[in-house]
Length: 280
Image (cartoon, rainbow, N blue to C red; front, side, top):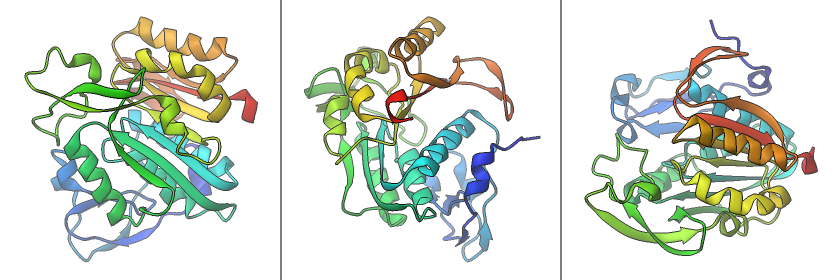
């Protein structure tokens, strides 16, 4: 049984009419089933009107909680950054949630994805959900320690592989050159501090986050880092934020069966969520 976080009670389920090709979340966000292998079996029939249930209890439930928390805290302009965005799953959820908050009058978003097909899907996804407005930047490129260009693996099966990284180009049979952005570069697109940053860059977090900690502390209110490689690497990320004075909201090591306030969850990638005391 799922013990849902209280944050879900602050948002209403949105009724949708199915298009016969997409799946839907409780905020009404549609995601085309071809983005993820195996999702076609979950597509409701075209024309069906319904409200989706709350998220199931898996490792992504944790993302849901912290994304919605960031929206609930926001006033005026809400700003979100998603690094390693895929089709922009979490930035789109955040922007959809903002529609339900009268305290939020404007939104800004920066979402960056290195794989070209995934980036195209992100543009399609934002357009389908009416999220492509002024202040929304969908960047084709990769996060790196320095701006310029960087090598990224070619993904042969984009509906199966969301784990490519600038760190594994040596093991790839085919690579491409993409624009390299630093974390600071992405923050420069915003008119003010980011309410939330979601980082899932498949191991490159250890090359980029430490170098940008000062910028994060100055310009980001809360951050989720998906951690990879090893438990030692995960703990180093926790220690990085703790030593800088951030408050750790969630700390779940990779590859563990973890007890959470919502029930037991099998954790794949590790999860570190930190809140910036400067903005509390």
